[in-house]
Length: 154
Image (cartoon, rainbow, N blue to C red; front, side):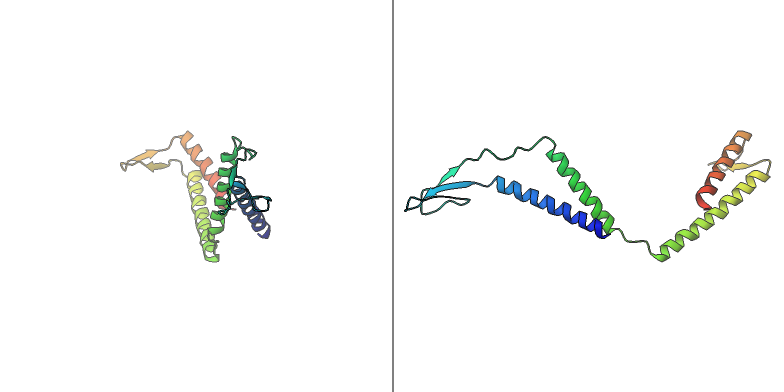
């Protein structure tokens, strides 16, 4: 878990530095000369002297994939945060899941026994009528029951 936190921290730090650099690159630069004739440069104009804004065209251009990368980074961070926020399974929840699995296993085994031992099997339709399974339908039901035993009876 410590490695994941380290990677998360690195990702956040890298993103923060990237956003910080974008802000620095887009900052205005001013030039002025003081009374002694010395040229000064800064990010704020000198109020007492005549300052000239210097145009900087050497800022890196955004490539066409920058927005997509930013979206993927945000999605990745959101996914990690969501996983971290999910409560851990408690022992009580695990015991309940195990109890449900055991009950399902018993029911599936009973269903399989009925399918194997009875010649005529029926299901009730939505309107309450009995629909007797054909041999093909019975074979499909046997396949489903065997599959469910594999799922529930581990």
